[in-house]
Length: 502
Image 1: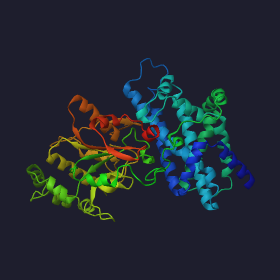
Image 2: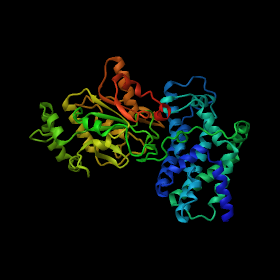
Image 3: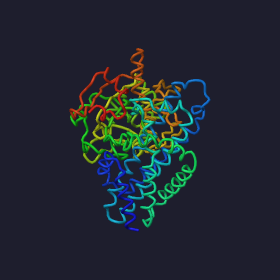
């Protein structure tokens, strides 16, 4: 059994593409449990994409005589970009298999099972997605188009098919089945995912999936060794959350630039941030991938909201002295306390943002330690901005919304916090941020906020004004202050901008 497993592992190592193998070395310090959570999350995302595509029968109708609308194409591209992102996560984890074999036995088995789960999830959902999309020549052509701002190169759909519909994947599937025998059982959630995906792959092999593989055999032979382009194979980040794989812990926006920001910012300003090499960018379309709300310190809030309209608002809400911070403390005591608690270095919280830990108060030194950052200021009076803070404080402490569901308030994603803080309503003119469809959900994205600024500036009726744009450049390893015109073009940048720009 040990010899068979060793031979299977050798086969897997030989099948792994060189770029992915290089990236695998970046991942081997991660714990298997962390990898399991990531694999399961990306598997869920792929299941959502497949379910969404299956539910859009009108897009896949071979007999359809009308051309897809721009909205249809954007929705399909958004789903495809999400699928590519999460396939990249799973491919990177799969590429670690050979490296995990060098670990101590118990740790090795856990890592190998997670790698196996990653392979099966990517393979199963790849086959399912291909079977669905190939029903419509029009949909397949749309997915082969280049959409740079979403990170889609021309021909990605053809390469995706070639990656999953060939004998190499089938051989790898068989090798992993051999390798898994006699290994320690994976965690229950991983085991359930493995069994479900294994069964689906076998079922797909009996019917159309097998026929598709045969139909692509000639292309496989003609392009032997040709691997799909995945962002992960280009050196982009290979781990979800707060881990990057390049440039250590440094950010292109410098500490000195961050230290100068408070003098330019006001409570209620919206921060757009970009961090290169993070897999937290996955599933989010476009260059700008994070949004946050500048709330300032209590002293900054008192100075800024020393206003007749704000005092009237506070009294209307039950605060006799008209003090907004006192109203915040009365209505949201836990949030108010968190907003006053400095970090270990003594920096005061100034930002409220939805991050993986939940909707949290963070310091500007932490939040603005990005590679590019832009600050947008709503063109609203102080009373409206005070309403936005009251709403935002109400959401503090809620968990992060990994489902990107704007319909619910129980958990929030980063741009959702900004969207709901400034949502127009009775007595609140607010800011109307655009919604776009992503795998069947209507969401406002950070990149969409930048795109909206560009469109409204062109029309001469912006809801927001640009306060500052610190634009990072990988080549110079620093961020410089850029013009409003440069910011207006930033949303058009390729999603994996650092790869293209360097």
